[in-house]
Length: 211
Image (spheres, rainbow, N blue to C red):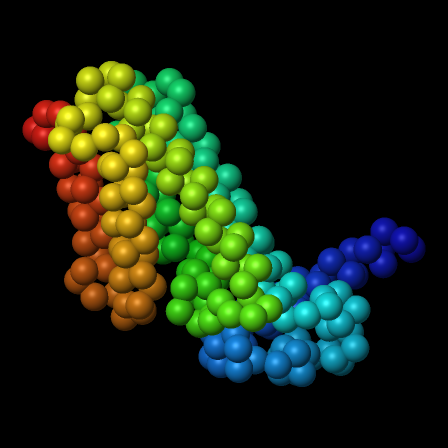
């Protein structure tokens, strides 16, 4: 009975998160109320508060469900690039293209990215969410820098910039690319070219660009 109760609670919690994602997409986070999430989930307002104290907690849970596994995969790819890859630049390219592929393949991930990027105002109670995003971005940027350092050690990296400068440039490039991708739901030609953009971006960092 206890196991069944825990399973039911987990199912209800996920039902709330799914409902919140649907409402956030339509109304934006700031214009969504707990009552609207409850109605979308087919639950009472009290049932929502049993699982979540606030809308911020729901947003954090929504983000964690999608972002944490994705960040783990990113970190794994970049860690391999930094610690032992024969061609760290290929690992960086793989990290970028695999992220885009996940967005292509998973509507849940794609919708969550859309909410976090363009459907949420990070003020007041949502400042905590912004801080967590900033921390994750800093970690990713550092891992990219380590991968570029490894490429430099292998004499694969063009010496025009330092690994730190290349890492910041790649981070800013990919942030812009993600925003372009998310803001193009119809899938224009530019969205279809994201893999080519990534390949060119990494190629320009090679010591021998024809490699």
